[in-house]
Length: 162
Image (cartoon, rainbow, N blue to C red; front, top):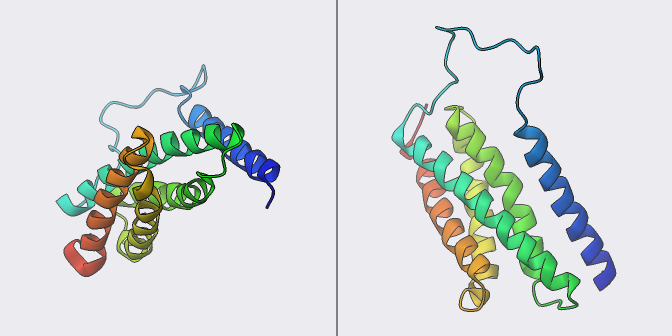
């Protein structure tokens, strides 16, 4: 893949992530019904392990998005050094986002996804590791991936079952 294509893909991904974040965080439209007092609260994790997994994977998504933005800036400046990192982070973000959501709601599917997520986080951390001493974004992503990997492996091994 040529550098121009890498930059185009990375830029489109960053824009898509931004739009999803903006649209997902918008306030309820005017005229929308307010929550009814006494209405059921959103589901919560059924175990401390799932709560921890939801938190660590959410942190991993945030750190990964900052790392991806750093990679895109680097690629746009003409350096291909961060190309592998960008590719790895692009794979990590969606699986961590999905596992964070499943864990936060206490889904019975969290354990099934946890093993795959741990593997993806381990790969991402391995790719980030050479950059840890050079870039704060890579260091934060590396640390978040290691935490998510550990929490996901604990759940995958059966440390938590809703």
